[in-house]
Amino acid sequence: WLLRLPSSGPVAPPHQARGMARVTSSCPQCCGEGCRYHGRHGSRSCRGCEDAARLQISLGRIPRCAGCGKRDAKGRVDEVQSRNFYCTACWAKYDGDRLVEHFDEPDVLEQKCAALAKMISSARHIIAFTGAGVSTGAGIADFRSGLNTKLPTGPGMWELPKADRQAGNILEQCAQAKPGRAHKSLVRLWKAGLLKHIITQNVDGLHRKSGIPANALSELHGNIFVERCTKCDDEFERDFNVICSGGLTGRHCDRARCGGALRHSGVGFGQDLSEKITDKAWKECERADLCLALGSSITVTPASDMPAYVAERHRGKPDKGLVIANLQSTPCDGQAALRLNGMVDDILERVEAILREKGVLSADVDLLST
Image (spheres, rainbow, N blue to C red):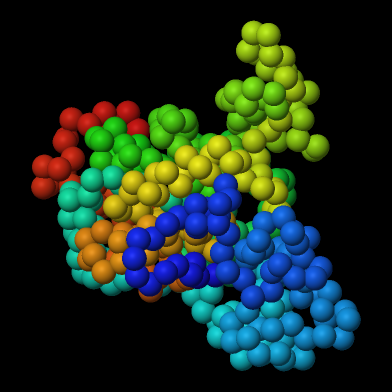
């Protein structure tokens, strides 16, 4: 899971270092025999790990553990999150740790919020990297929260047995949702000129709904309200969910003399990300001296390489680099300059309040998003 970068000298973004538009990360099982991405992407943690591991098992071979590299006939594939094969010992530690929710004591969290406000005050180019935890406050369930989660949306969809999952599709929740407190805080920080760009893994479109313009967003996995022309690449934002089977929506480009077929912008598991969008996101990572990773497990590649890159680029600088606000642990916790354990909604609103008290965030900032 961890991005492996040089320990000294200038750090180049992985997509530049490898001459690729898409970033990749180290994975002990890809690209291997049975990986559905073999020969296409180099190596990354992906569903291909599961395919490769299962093929090896079916052939009577035991894959190497993603944690320690040992072979264990009693090991297992993580079907929910990492898609990697683990030996018995590493699985026990991994499965025991990955769903634990961590909460800072109130006085500790207050100190950390004050520290984050100070970091924001001194930063030149701040970006946010958002995951499903930003939208739980808007009523959209995430994927990985455990059965004992404190989130009001309840356990993550991938942790619930199919019989216990809510009726309907997650996309229906997204289509009906309205921006939550975290989205509103972020748009206020953007309007104040403090936040420059948001890189999001979410497809719910709530950042746009909150007021963040498309040019200040990199929606890595698409947007259920956006369809894209297959000919000229123009985007068209709708007020309804455009996701459909097969990808082509049946509509055509509105641009004069184009008329190209429109395809929804959603990116499914195993599909390549938009080169144009990832390039824009990487440019923002290169400019950033502070990255706020909010509500993300930072495990889904290649997106997860972005906050890791910012962390590595500013390693050793206590007021710069990566800040993580999340309930569960992430692979990047050890690289972060600051780690806050709590609800993202609460953290952002408290940081906002401190910035106002210090005069960094004007009380006159447009509060239409309150």
